Each structure stands twice: as structure tokens, then as C-alpha cells.
Length: 470
Image (tube, rainbow, N blue to C red; front, side):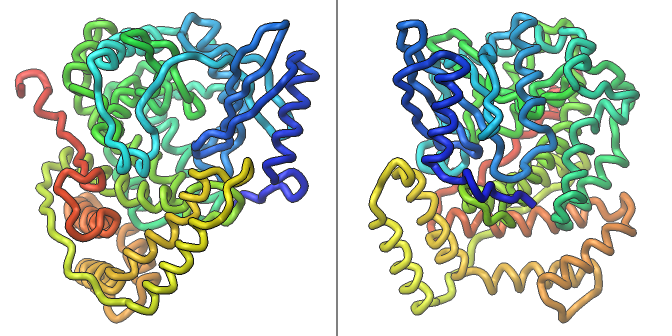
């Protein structure tokens, strides 16, 4: 588990250390740092350098282990992309304490990257952003043509054979369950399914962004690629799968049209079966970080964002898997809430006190909102806790034939069942996990939520796009 720094884990100490580094190493003066709302410590810096006022971007370590690569790996992959002509910010240095990448600031904008932000402010696709998205597919095809050995020289691992090409990144994420001791039955099922169903014939590896579709644009111009902290060598279909995983929570536009643009730019036909498989790997990798985040008590982070992501990502992962195995999934509705008047009053008092906390550089408005989101979420969840537990226990008992146990015992029984299960149980397990995660999505959306609420955003099918099926 992540241990927070005991001596420097304060806003003032980080600001002082980063400011001193910028002054000493880059010769900056008049430094002003603005903390951004992100998973990790991210700062926009305004500085004067060589008599010119300019902006920099500072990216620190994640507050808990959300992915398997150290920060200096991200820095080296980003530097290699920049040196090979990709539109990605130039690396200016790396502050050792607090461990932070310092890079140039690039103009441009994008939609919110957090689900909570997408719920509050629905993602949209402008005409200019769409043109930039098409251009991004050309850039992605160029990136995938960069010789892999350039990244191997900087620490990327070259996969050997179709299995490693397919699961190079996934297996590194899965290792985190052993190092943190945190896992759950959905991970156990999906990890075994992935290893049993590796696509055949995928023998070419490229450098992948790992979390594709993140870029800034200004007008119709792509100004820079963002976030390559999980960049790795693997199947190019993995990058395209990210588009399915992100959309429509982050509106990526016409996904089939983007795929056709990439196909034309790369000069290679898409393998839709491999793309569908890689969608499951991407969604499962995206599930690990927030699952671990639910167990974290260190400073910072966004606990409710973790809970929301676990539910929505887990459900969409099941939808992606269901398409591959040809399984239909049925929705259902939230029941009437259970009355909890005393607990509601307690949560209301806590929320009111948090909302009254005075703002300061150490506690910005968005940070206070993150704090208040925890009791708000728990207040709603409490109204449906017994319903969700009752349904979960009943469905697990029907599958495993282990009854009359607690939720924790039921999860343990389900994990034991998965360890012995073969492909004949894929459909039943997919349906079970879909229903579990859908229940949590219903609770997140709350009573009376519209059908198009972000929590219900479905994984759009793609296998009908295969040659001859369109």
C-alpha cells in the first residue's frame, strides 16, 4: 500500500520544493503554481524565464498505485515520442522531491477526463474537435510505425509472441493484485478468460499510448498528445480499443468513422476480433486503479470517483465480453429506497459542515467538493445497501450453491468457483458480474435518473463492422 510522505506531505512543502527546483535548475523567477483537479498531483506553473513569462506543466507521482510503471518511465517514453516527431510536450527536467516531471505547457483544450466531471458537465463533440480527432488517427498510425527498439532502449519491454503481445500490459496490471493484496472475483474471472482467449496471429508489436484518445486541440489542430504513463509495446488494436472504452462518457464522436480513418492511415485492415478482445483488456486494466483507490487512506485522491469508476468500468467490461461470447444482457430498475432518517440527518450535518470549511490554497473549492462527495454518495448508497446485498448473495448462491453467508464469504466462494470453472460457465459469470455492477450504477445515478445518465452508458458493439458483416 502507498505510504504518504510524513515530512513533505503538505501543500506548502510541495510548493516550496517545486518552486526552489524551478528557480535553481531552470533559472525561473516569479514562480506561481496552480494545483489542477487530476488523479495525481498536477500543477500549472507560471514563471519568468530569460525575461519571458511562460507556462509549464508539472506532473507528480500518483497518490496510490494506479498503474505498474514508475514516473521516470513515463518521462522516458514521452521524451522518446517527442524525439521521434510526435506532437507531445518536450521534457524540461525532473524534480526529485517531490518526484515530478517538468514539461512545456501546450495550448489547447479537451473534455473532462473524470466520470464525476462528465456527470456534471456532459462531454460534447464540436466540429473542430471532430476534425482534430480524425487528424489524431493519422498521428496514431504514425506513432505505431516508430521502430519498437527505440522504446526498448529507454526501458520498454519487447513482448515475445502473440500471447505477450496481447497481454503485455495486462499482466503487469494484474501483478499489482499480488503486490497490493487487493483483488475481487470480477478480476479473477476476466483474467482467466483473457488468458484462455488470446487472439491468434497477432505477431507485430508497436508502441501504444496505453490510454489512447487523450489529446489537446485548438480549432481543428492537434496541439499535443497527453498521458503516456502506461505506454507500452503491444497490439495496435489495444490503442483503438481505448476509444470504445472512453466513449460516450468522453464523447469521442463517430467511432466506426475513426476506425476507418486509422485503417486508411495505417494501410492495414483492422482485426475487429482482436479489437474486441483488447477492449476487455483495456477495461480490466482501467478497473485496477480505482479498485485499489477504494482501499487507500493517504492524502488526496477522489474516493467517490474510484467507486463510480469501479461500477461503470466493471459493467462496461462485462458488456464488451458479452458481445464476444454472443450473450444478451437485460437491464432492470432501481427499487424503492429504504428509509434511513437518522443516518440521513447525520450525513446532512457532515455535508453542511464540509461545505462551510473556509477555502484556501490548501483547500480549493474542488477539493472541498471531493470531500463532501463521500457522505453524499454514502447517503444514497445506504438506501439501497440491503437490496444490493440481498440480490448479490442470492445470485452467487444460485451459481455456487453456497448459501447463508456474508457478502465477504460469498465473494470468497465465488472466487473459489471461478478458479475451477471452465468456458462452460463464461455466460453465467458474465451475466452475474453485469448484474452486480449494474446495481451499483443504478445506485450512483439515483432514483428517477434519466435513461441517458452517464452511469448507464453502454459499450457500443463493433463486431458487426467486420468485413462482410456490415
